[in-house]
Amino acid sequence: MVSIIILILILFGLIIHRYLNTFWEIGRLPYPGGFTIFSTLFIILYLINYIWLFGFLVGIAIFVLTLFQIIFSSYLWPFLLPSVINIHKNQSTILFDPPKVNLSIYAIWSFIIIVLGGLTLLNFLISDIGHLLVKIEELLDNNYKTAAILLVGSMFLGNLIRISIMNIIKRLRH
Image (tube, rainbow, N blue to C red; front, top):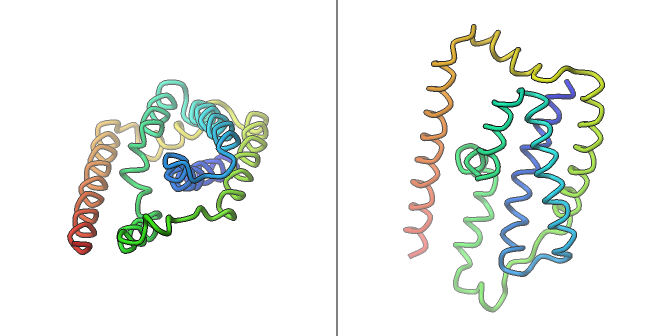
């Protein structure tokens, strides 16, 4: 159960991190030094958790997919779609009234990182390394080919849908 909570917190953290990173990139994020520290801590935590939950090789593979935002662009992008639509809708006024970061979301993200750190330590005590991978292997009956096809296919489909929706949003703006 702790492992599932950790994965959910990582997914929420990734969504919120992408939202906050948008403001950080344009220089509109308060306390950018704190954001950088928490971002680094978050990366370290999800690396540790992926290795602990899925074993070394699969954990590193998932870490790389997450770090290069392939997980976000394939599966998590719909959660930020309302803010993207809002930015595109208000494109003409964005120079005079730039969007402001939601400080509640900023605070929640910091809290998620702290809780994730605590749950990571707890998970070391109550589970073995690679225990989720073992459960997934049992579920798939050790059929790695099917798992790989499902993973690559869902990533491709998720990105295709994201690109299509972003093109629709861009066309509606013009």
